[in-house]
Image 1 (cartoon, helix red, strand yellow):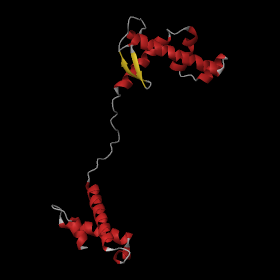
Image 2 (cartoon, rainbow, N blue to C red; image 1 turned 180 degrees about the horizontal axis):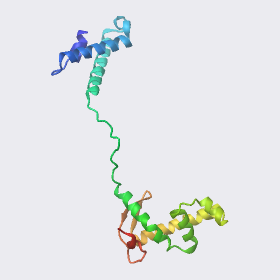
Image 3 (tube, one colour; image 1 turned 120 degrees about the horizontal axis):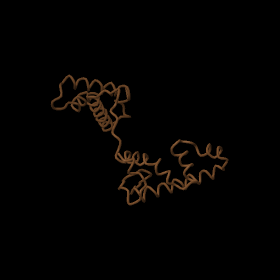
Length: 180
């Protein structure tokens, strides 16, 4: 126990705290190895190494318990949206006007899928078209919409997120009417 007390004693630490730590370490030793600690199965070097490990563990646990904790708030503050999320939202606001500029076969499909949230399968059933036809037309409509956004509004994409919007470039797409 003297080795354990010496190992746990630190400058500036109250003697009562050291006594508590020695007691906790001794209790751990008894629980884990018990009577085997003094036998030949535990030579002196192994015993000292184990005592060091237990003492260090007890010391670290003592300071972890003392660390102040902050209670969780019931209503955490919502972080403000990242600039890219705001840009994506801004560009999404332009979609109704830009969809109206698409060619006729794509316009109605894009309006239903992108603005009204219809599924492609339900739209195919309602229009009497094959699901693959609707899927192809929606994909082509999205490509045309993206090209329109890039050419007219200077939208730059990265991983399907808008990262930059320059401004309308000589093409009257109408996005300037919906800008805030």
